[in-house]
Image 1 (cartoon, rainbow, N blue to C red):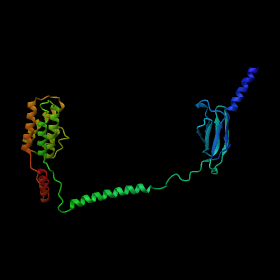
Image 2 (tube, rainbow, N blue to C red; image 1 turned 90 degrees about the horizontal axis):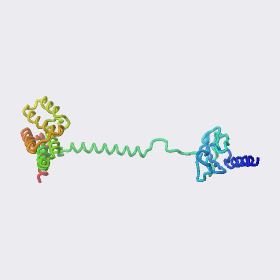
Image 3 (tube, one colour; image 1 turned 30 degrees about the horizontal axis):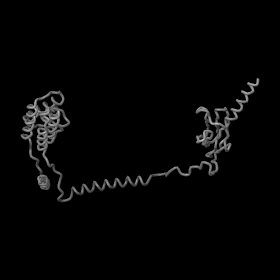
Image 4 (cartoon, helix red, strand yellow; image 1 turned 180 degrees about the vertical axis):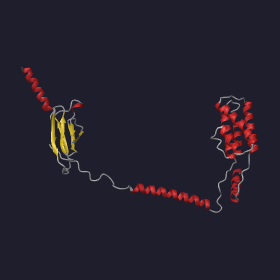
Length: 282
């Protein structure tokens, strides 16, 4: 019998020890209150939960900050004891005090952000002025038109010479030789015949060149050069050093035979080309 009374007393003391008090007892809308527990919760499952309120933990595990955020019935359940603190929240903000949450007076600027719009307008103005100035410079008398410094055949021949002198052939780096050499040849075809040979397959290039009415002998001579390069790049054919040297010689010969000089049709363009060429030769 004595042991039973002691158990009942222990349970009663535990219930009292885990009870909580709310100050003020009935916080109104927006008012900050303090919930104090007699003892800290034993684990995370025993923390209080609120209805119509927001609870925030503090550095003291026995103390919580409470704010009523909804009009109507509010409640805080204390799971450790099964108790529930209940009160009614009126539809009126509590009077602001130094210890309460003040009503929000200003969330932010309503309307456009003028500094952002101003910055965007300034950027657009700079773009317009830049375009206007470029167009004006083009229309100024004596302005040198943009002319190519190097015709396509000179670019291709110079690149083939660089590949020949690179030492790739003697080192057996035939993939590099044919990839870069065929790119130089296709670049010449693109510039000379106005076809995107760098983007087309060999079949597409030959078909378009033939359909465009170019000399059949020119097309027939470049066809085996392109296909030989394709067989090394895509079919893993391994040529000899002699074959690689011969391919570059044949590509150079075809380019030199089919090259045409660049014609500058206007006096201004001719003078600009001469100035650019003279400056480059110095």
